Image (cartoon, rainbow, N blue to C red):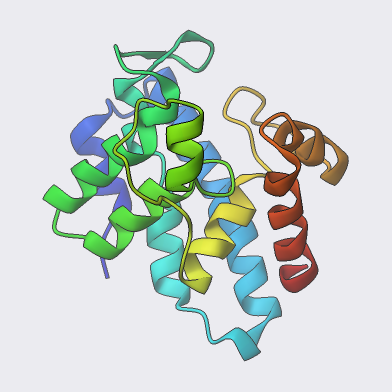
Length: 179
C-alpha cells in the first residue's frame, strides 16, 4: 500500500490553492469509485488500487496551463494524463500510471488523437481494466473548477457530446454497469 498524499506533496505545495483543488477533486473521485466497488462485489475490484489511483490520476495538472484551476504550466490541459503517467512511472507505479494516461474523457483512442491532432503520444489511451473504467467513470462526475457540486448525468452528457456522441455512449454504457 502506498501513501498517495506523500507522492502528491513531492509535486504540490501542501495547503496551496492548487494542492487543495487537486486533493479535493481526487477525494471526490475516490469516494465515487469506491461506492461503485462496494456496490458491485461481483466485479471483484481492487479497492486499495482504486483508492490510490484515484488520488494520483490528475497529478500532472501542475504542468498545464489552466489558470481557472490555478495551473500555470506551459502544456495544454489535454496533456495532463500522459504527463502524470510519466511522473507516476518514475515513482515506480506503472499500473497507477496507466490510470493517469487513460482517464481523459472516456479515454482517447489513437484514431481520436490523430484525427483531432492532439499534442499527445500516438497510441491508444483508453481505460482497459475494470478499475481503470470505474475511475474514469467516477471522474466524469466532478469538476476541478466547481468542486462543491457533482455533475448531473445530463451535464455529463452535454460535456461528452462536445467530443462526439461515442464519448457519451461509452459513459452511459459504464453507467448502466456501475450505477
